[in-house]
Image: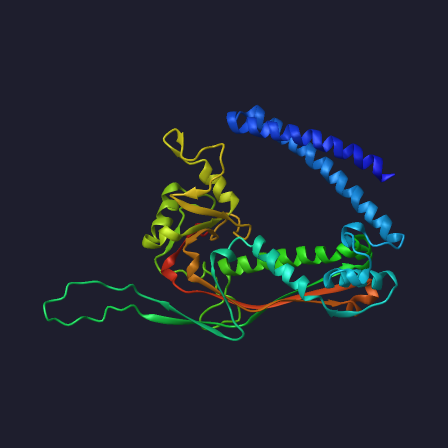
Length: 377
């Protein structure tokens, strides 16, 4: 039933993907509105066909699973369960358990936690810009405070103490955790692929939480119960406040960047897509400051990172953070640990999945960052 339909869709997909590539190359040459619209239309059609193919493959896997077989995409030529990886065996055991009405709890395989960690690194937009340390306990980082001062010295005169003040920051082991419930029916529908589902969902959740805490964490030097974020710990004088609660000007953007002085050379700009949309419309007289057919990748030579964790442009919100993120330090004390809690939700036909990690982060040099805030209401 599925085979003939799949073959038809695959032929259609091959044909339309060829057209998509041709239109894309033409669009790059001309950049006309008609070519852009044609490309978007063809790309949408290709995506719809691919989605239909994916649905058919999912139905095939489900049908095979209901007949007692192991889905081909999981087995991949392996002869029996003993030849599957630890991760695949665990997924198969989980599916078998819920299909037979039994429950069990335990740690997910180390491979699963490692996959989550790797996927988290790829998804995170901010973490990769920071300095990361691996440590088993509390970790102390020694960082410079004031810059070295160079001055004239008289012949046979004494050198003044112009060394920078070296200050320590302590990185502790704060715990971040998540607990979610998945229905047994959904696990059965997914088959052994439940492991991929768990990995993707938790990797995205932890990546987003870490990025948000790095930018906006509310921890303080006197109370390290939460991660200290950049926006709440910038240096006095490194904050620019917009004249409006809903929009910004080019002068305000430029003023924020210039607050960094020497740290601009290795800085990144972090903001929301909403702010970039406003910047895209900036004009110098009657001429747009940024090419309208291109996305903004740099402002004043500084790379731009769009983050979903930046708030909407509203009264008092932080619209933009700019700085050298190597001066933000992260300590990974314990990588992500995953555990199933089947019996906890057995009465409601669900399986609990719990993940946790021990981590801390702190800003090492406040002068290396600046922020643009919207006017308070």
